[in-house]
Length: 83
Image 1 (cartoon, rainbow, N blue to C red):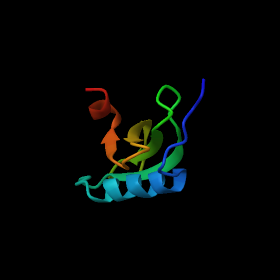
Image 2 (image 1 turned 135 degrees about the horizontal axis):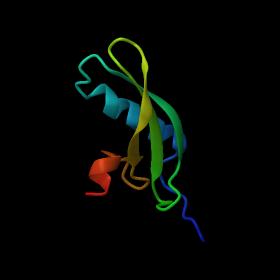
Image 3 (image 1 turned 30 degrees about the horizontal axis):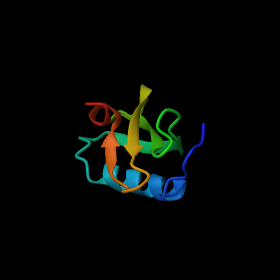
Image 4 (image 1 turned 120 degrees about the vertical axis):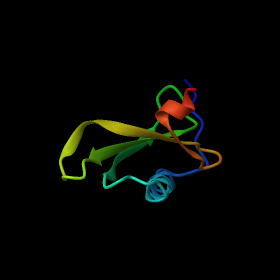
């Protein structure tokens, strides 16, 4: 498989995802970027894995996934990406 290199770097994808999360009304929840990697089935984009912490501070099982478009930098949730 010949993978194209995204225009957006991994560090830029992390910063874009962090900025996206900062704009959300998390109602006391805390989201922290855990890892960033190129998406296996969609190598033009970045997958950003986000740990979720409850308002009480406990780590919630199952991360949130964000997809960062490697060409435009648009950040979408995993769910909205596949709608």
